[in-house]
Length: 501
Image (tube, rainbow, N blue to C red; front, side):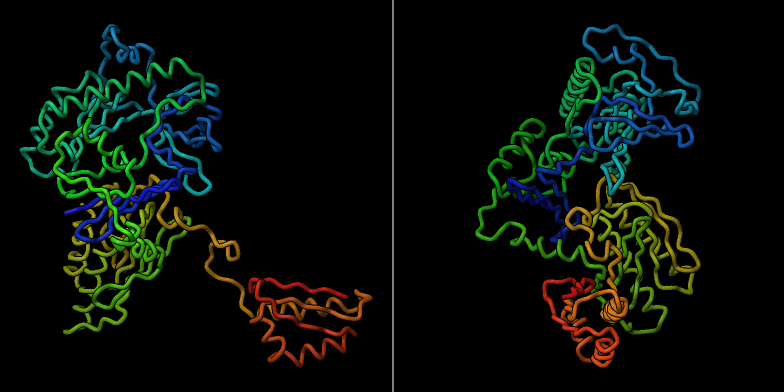
């Protein structure tokens, strides 16, 4: 069973999905940094790049949005007219084999052209957001895709009969030349409820097209609801037992949403009124802090190390304190199996995406490598993010990708160290000490003063006053200045100041 726990303050909202008392997913939204994923804009093409088969689109944000040719739909005015009330229906000729003909970006877009786009990936790091013109509108049970022409069923619905029922139902209610994705929440839902969701999404789409005709680019056309409503819409399933919130306004928002979509929900909605902060009471704060650690210990005594870089994420598996009970191969297998489960958990919790390399401990037996790979694949089924995994190589490496649509947890709640600039390392005390000694040598015949005052971190000062005291005395005679060293606790270890008096 799962719980959705929501902590709301005027500054930020935090949401945790808890499965069997384990925090598996975390979502943050700050008022000053509200996400734009799913928002729909009327944008203007400001640059077409044939060499990259892409374009940059001004949607009114600080950085231009990136639009790849594969995400461009060339919709005619007649096609858009299908979704305005009382418009005459117009049939489109189907493409052969149902496939889109390959196009070049220069054939589809020109600079200055206005386009309707939806944010498919949040800005990450120094990159602007990615957008697509294949708009999709998520509801409680369905996702409406106005520019598609097929039906998809959530992969998390595994019962064959239920999948066939939902496939037939979706084909029956979907508008002509529009696509639908049936969401996990639709499993077991009645036709009337799903049809009502369909009608609501169609109204939203019509309003979007009307708004598009009224405004000039760049403009925001449609904004996704706040994170509380999105979380309930996207996370609520038959497995969710309770929704627990700590703010009355949040409770009202969620209740209004459920009354619209789910008048008789199977889960309970509770207002938390304890004395402790809600995330402290449910031990979520502790999990957030742990999610920033590089090293994650396994129950057996082994551990994994997670290194996030700009290009990829490297995960290393180690036996640590685990010595096993039988033989080395069995010890390695058990560590790898436990690590496979923990790695998937950490990927979801930390929202790690992009290219991921997992270095499992080398196994001699092919059947053991297969066991570890199957365990990894099995646990990835719980992950809503799209993943692609290659078989374990002879070196014990697994290459995989996980779709990244927003910043990782680490980048959301932390920032780059201003001293090491993200490397995780600073220059040693001795390196700084020897820099200072070299700088003092340069003062020879360069200053008319009689004293030299050095402000330096206390750890570096200890080396200068003790281990290198003889060298400092020698320099004092060489440069002809009295040298005074003053430890400064407010300086970073790499900082120092040399003043000639």
